Image (cartoon, rainbow, N blue to C red; front, side, top):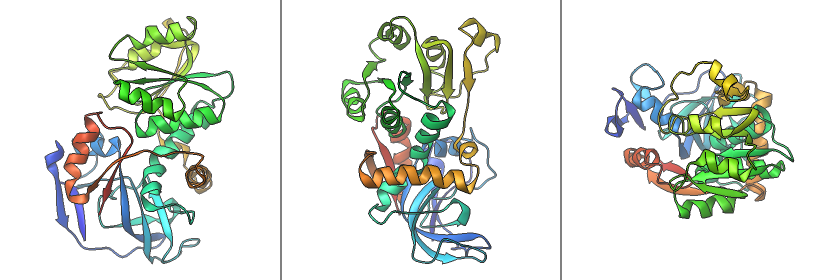
Length: 322
């Protein structure tokens, strides 16, 4: 089978399309023939070495397809099931061996591209808006990268929960997309200092919570956008990792809360994983949650997918088709 491997961390050119043996599933595992693969910033972090893994590094944390074989001791999943998963590295391939505990059976009306576009970003948006800071009526949140895949889903879920949403984007075209997702106000950060505009839009108060996937470029101004005792949620590094800060800074800026969450800690049990995935996939299948698939690429064109994602010029989810 064909698979993307990284023998030496670095740029997009370090990803190699190689022929490897197709492994049989072991106990508690299933073999999935992949039909669609999600591309995410975490894949770039592993490719560059920001996140460490032994070489050769397999990439891809999200996929959807059909179960081709089932190992011993697997219940609830059978050969022929249409499934999706995330949080298991190695989906940049034609086949993947996946722990059955990470597998979710798809609703009949949901296609593979939608499933692979929804799992990681959808469950991330779910835990951020439902658990890390449980949004509700009367709460105002700031969402960076509001036209991106995760940003658009955060906005939609925030509106489901009754929150007011302020989004930031780089262009007027992206502002339209953020508005289509439901943002109440959209700030073009290329035309103003977004923290000052946030304070203006909130009557000087600041927002209750910031959802920041951008990282270094927005971190300090995100803190300045918060009300006293507000929460800073930094969950990505699109512009680079956030530098170290002194805890006293949080006191000086209003007794702020700071968290750096990860989906794995918010879907740590099978029950929690299924609860989040079933919400997300059910909402997508019913049309309550709208996905925006930006572009699809053949597996062999994975380098271009990474270049496009890192440019932050895309809007919506990027997918690989094996």
